[in-house]
Length: 196
Length: 249
Ligand code: SF4
Ligand code: SF4
Ligand code: FES
Image (cartoon, rainbow over all chains, first blue to last red; front, side, top):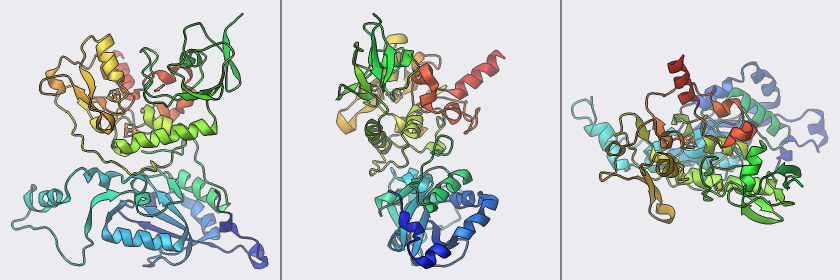
């Protein structure tokens, strides 16, 4: 299913100067590696900026996602705040993309999933090595509550496309985005499709 | 008259007694598979090799080739079903490829690339399967086991040791080690056993090979599994090969 409406040229004004697509990006339980890889498209950022403008993204510092054409989600869902942000993206983005291994299957943070959360917190803040005297589990109300398990984003909201990789290469991200912007269903061949 | 059948419209010769898989592999044709290996009797469990013969589903590693058969293999319909089987395998275990030593040499991963699998799709089980690092030379990382029984067959039939077995039923099936303690160190298993080099995924891992071949330069990084021709059935291990070459100079 290609998203032709991303390139809606039916209205006369749109045909003359195609509207720039709005793109939002966020890192949930990720390491920002996928965002770094996005920047690895290097000088191709310039032609990309002819076609898109950024809404919420670490690149703009806009705090909330407005109506967008494409949303890129890096990272899985590990706490309550991640759930809210992911739902805000889903509500605002026509096409939502899971970007990278953690968004696709939970990735490294999900390797805690077979352990009880309480045991992990005890270990990390109370009983582990090298802790300061009297160290305790952080309980500031500002801190988002961790979930019992880390989830891939498709277990929380509907995801339209998946781009795996840890991180996906700049070339893979470029190929994927340009195909999508051209109104095609993106496909990655050998060499661009990687889980590692 | 030469015996032959049609595989996706191509003539494939066979000798009587050969399975469709054996004849296809001998002709350098790739039929996706995980539990089949040319050196062992067919297992018929993973179902990745399912083809359509005369419009009916059959596992090509168990069905005999017959003259005039019309076999469908790489159709969109069959590859979509294979993709679903792979997705089930991925969510049943813990497959975190970025931290897996086997990445790039793994038949499960390479087959999923070949089928264009972009997401595991289903909800993950995230099972709890502790590793067994007791053996001095080999690590067992049960989180990635796909229950193909290649190690079971190799240890029993080639090594004559019977080190591995499957236990449990249904979703509780799992690989066990045949020793009183259940630990690999308490068996007569060695790193030179055939069973140590037959796992298609990252369960049975020789220690101290680590990243001798970097990610990106491994077997299936260089070529897709479908382009491996008659070798597609062999287990890839670029790291073990590199270590061996270093030893022998
Ligand atoms: S065994 Fe294969 S699929 Fe599983 S984590 Fe390792 S490389 Fe990935
Ligand atoms: S350990 Fe490897 S060879 Fe043995 S059953 Fe599991 S996946 Fe197959
Ligand atoms: S390869 Fe035939 S069933 Fe596994």
